[in-house]
Length: 98
Image (cartoon, rainbow, N blue to C red; front, top):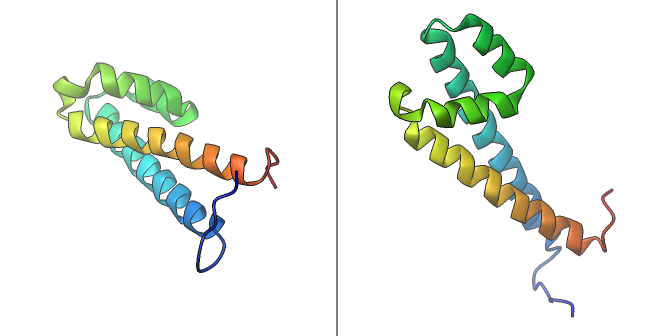
């Protein structure tokens, strides 16, 4: 089954969506890193720079303490949307990523 997109290439909608999700994720990552460094945890902050997954998990662990619950929710939603968007892009290319 192929969906017909009137007005152009349907991939043109996916790329901006992926870029927006990526930007939101980077902003969330930086905001969590700032909170980690502000709390005096330099070693954990450096680890968060090296491993974004650590910053994500640690951010959720300290969301209430650091007052970043909304940041973490936004970051999580951006990741979830990006997974869907990337899956749609993959499906539209017949399973081949350029």
